[in-house]
Image (cartoon, rainbow, N blue to C red; front, side, top):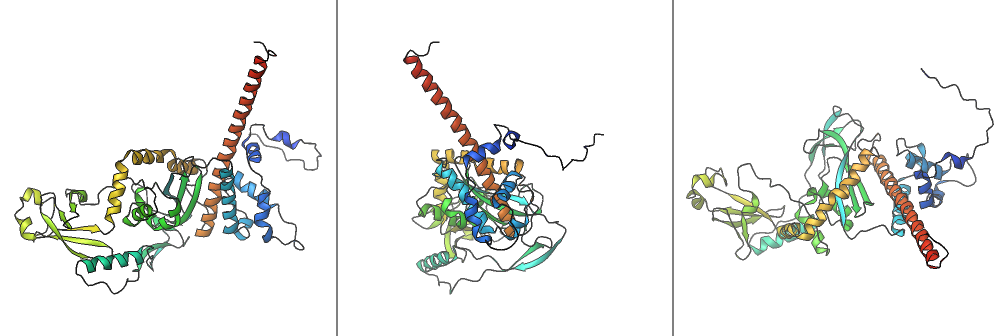
Length: 428
């Protein structure tokens, strides 16, 4: 077994430090792409100029974190370099990308990916927490009452406070949340809600506990969203995007109806008469509008009783032949989004997801160790994620600048050779 001998630290050596880094190394490209002197401006107010022990160079600390992909965050990042400094660094790198002319934010993509928390699933307790207030609640309440008055119903007195909900809380990391989707195993996790543009530069990232639904984070990301994941396909989100003059590209969302029953899209809404026609040509009439913004349409049981049993069983199992269909007061916006989905523009933009936001997540997890975080608490995990995506943006910027520089040099050489050849100074 080979054993390395102990280093003799009292030996004086003359070393050319520039020769230690290969000419084509990524670090050289990063050094040429961006000036780290800007970091001093971000942290100057955090250091005292006339007392205390000498500090470590903050630029060195930032570079260490970038190079090591944040495997260990030092004391400085936990206690001195606050989220404000991290935000400045993230914005600074993105501004350098913009200054280089690489941003294409005309179409942006948003999705969320989960990050396993540093918490044992077995160490948990049940806890009642206040329900999250919805950002659309005030507007929805107003329009619900308008709809009720239009149909001769008494308006509601006022919005009810959000109901408490019982969740499993980790005793290890209180701010993580239980995540489970599809075939994923249940685990405590965080969610990174991310926005990127056409060239895969990350424009924004917001971290939440893993049990927060995608749609609840939409308003934080709203100003940069046009192409989204199915988790964001709600009437409120579709309404917001259309009213802002943008075009949403929302994916197909599987009907949530019971197996063997007619899917919701088979029930056709008649705008003129304000009623719904079932697949067997029976009419469901408006009954009321609830607090959640859904118009409730009910059938006439006698009509459905006359329907052949082999057809009726796909519609209702009620022994009294009752059937209800809910339609949100903002359903028109979702229907418009469906029209966009089937349009050439919608198909093209949504097809780009696999090359953009999904590629960002794949790189973050496969190349930058974002499947699992060692840090605990929303603040620490958020700083860790934002620095990580800043490093991804920086790496791409450096590679693109280096490639552009090589291309420019090649073009210059080619033009010079052509010029010399035309002048007769060069023969082949």
